[in-house]
Amino acid sequence: MARRGVGTWIREGVWEIPLRRYTALVLAAVLVAGLAVAVRAVLRDDPSCGPGVARPEGGDECVGVATGPYDFGQSRLRDVVRAIGRENDRLKPGGFVTVALLLPYTTASSTSLNDIRHQLMGAYLAQYQANHEANGQRPQIRLVLANPGATGAHWRPAVEQLAAMTTSADRLRAIVGVGQSTEPNKQAVKELTRQGIPVVGSTITADDLANGQRGRDPYPGLARVAPTNTDEARALASFAKVSAGRALLVYDKPGDPYTRTLQESFAALIKGSPYEPQPFTPPADRTEEGSTANTFRQITHLVCDTSRETDTILFAGRHTQLRQFINALGGRGCQDRRFTLLTGDEASYLTHEKDLDRGALRRNLAVRYTSLAHPDAWTKARERTGGSVADFAALRRLLADAARAPMGPIGPAALDDGQLIIGYDALRLAVHGIREAVPAGRSVPALTDVGLQWPQVKGSLRVAGASGWICLDVHGNPYDKAVPIVELTPQGGSRFVRIAWPEGKPPGKECLPPS
Image 1 (tube, one colour):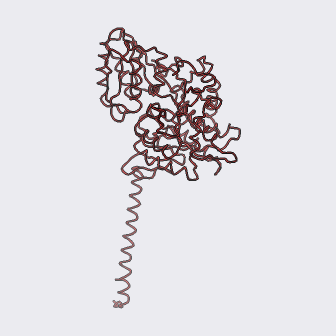
Image 2 (spheres, rainbow, N blue to C red):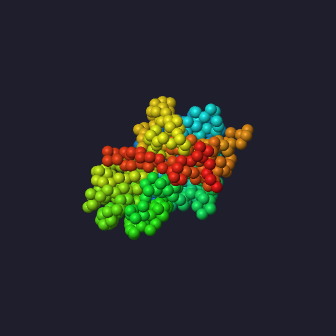
Image 3 (cartoon, one colour):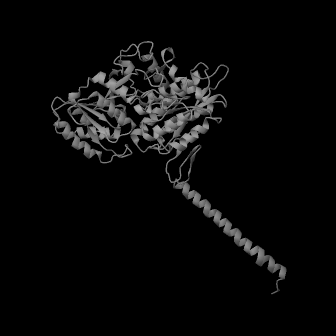
């Protein structure tokens, strides 16, 4: 065998053999890294979710502002999200402004998701109407979905994204939705309005998530399409003629913005009652079951211990606890006595709730509540002001058109829980504010000018909502808004009873709030 030269030894020993080894090691490392990425993707551990949306560190839900057609992993939202995506893709750059629908899209509650889907449908119908049936009015409306997390815990990064979109090509000009009156949502609205971003609340009803309380406006630029809890309670009282000596109050302790203000409103109605209000303490996340069912079973004994003249129960709590209480009342001992349970708009969540014991409603128990909207409110009522059959018919026509192209499909819809109707009205109010704020010779309003429009939404400038007239006072709250009184039925769904009014009667045809 011939001896290798020194040069060959150096080339192979020093360069080629180690280089081949290092190359092999690098390739192996790349393969391992790629496999790890693939595994993370399969296990949904990749922080990337969709355009504008990501999982926070240590989190397992996608939060943020979806700038593309992203359904947050909720198959029930898919059809309507795709419809919104088609409408957004049709818009020309520079000719639109953006409105964000802020809701907890990653909720694990099937009941809450139903309401979110319906509200999203209503917002899409209002977007389509604004872009196609407004006689060429500008700007056109792009709709995006903003998710602060299932409980609103990630509201701060969502708000930061939204604020950045006000100065970008997105030209964000309003937030609609917000969701329930919870502490995280209260903080989100406070920060949004602090930064001059107009907000239109669709289903928030808490008195302390509104302007005008004690003469203060802590949320400048906030408007609402739903009455406050106090106004709902006043409407309920005008309908039910609640008597202090015949009513028992059951309430959430320590409560949240919605339940606390509802409790205060109910307590004022029955001031001087001979019965001590009965508290219950739910989990911090009020969509969870917790152990409150045991508490409610005990409270039903106290209900039966009241005098036979007592026939009304006022309930200040969220829908999960309301369902538990109704189920407990279905098994109460005094089923020969008839009771009417009165509560706020949270009861609308139970319209299609599968875990509700409908049999309880056949055992001398009626459950009536103040709904934010109902499809029969204007078709069966004989009111001459405050709303109209024609205003609601416009929504019903849009919904029929959305069952087919080019609008739809958007998936199966329902109107009896009121969420689709109120979602439609909230976006219509936002569009009204945006277009009224456009200066002469321009097509896009300044951000801060949009919120300045709310005090003028009254009289001939009111918004003719499908839920009733939207006439705002100087604080952005609806004046004498129609409040449908609705009853849960044993057969499933709900039954419209009648319209009630916070002022005890419908507004005048001028719809001008008094001083």
